Length: 162
Image (tube, rainbow, N blue to C red; front, side, top):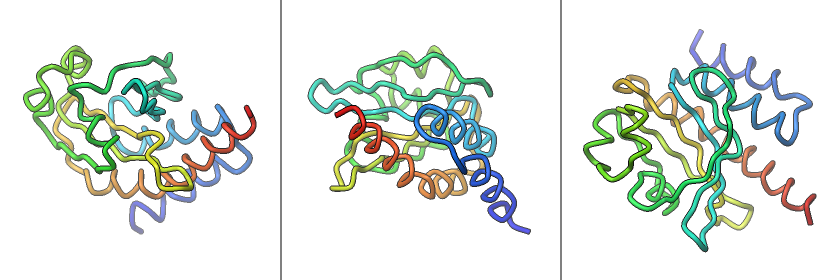
C-alpha cells in the first residue's frame, strides 16, 4: 500500500464536517503529522503591504499562536510570486536576512501558493524543517492536493464576513 492510500483517507475523514478555524487546524495538524515538518502553516497574503499573517500554525505538533510577518527577504516572497519553492537544505544561507528562519534553526523549506477562484495568489502553505528534507516531492504533492480546498475555505470565510 502506498503512503497516499493510507494517509489520504485519514486526512479526508478528519475533515468531513469541519469548516473555518476547525478545518484549518485539523487539516494542518494532519499535514504536519504526515509531512514530518517541525512547523507547518497556512498564511494569508496582504499584497498591499507585502505582509503575511498565519491563519493556522502548527509548531512541533501543537497549534500555536498566529503571527504576522513581512515577506521581504523571505522564501515566502517567492511563493507569493506564484512559485512552488522547495529547498531541501541550506535555506538560511540562501536567505540570510530572514531572521525568523535563523532563530528557528530551519534547514529545509517547502512553500506552495494558494489561489483564489480567479487564479490570484491569496496565501501560502509552508513546511519548515530543522533538518534536511528527505521527502520533498511527497510533501509538495500532499500540499498541492489540499491547496484548492484551503483556498475555497478562505474564500468562503471572506464571503461570510462580507
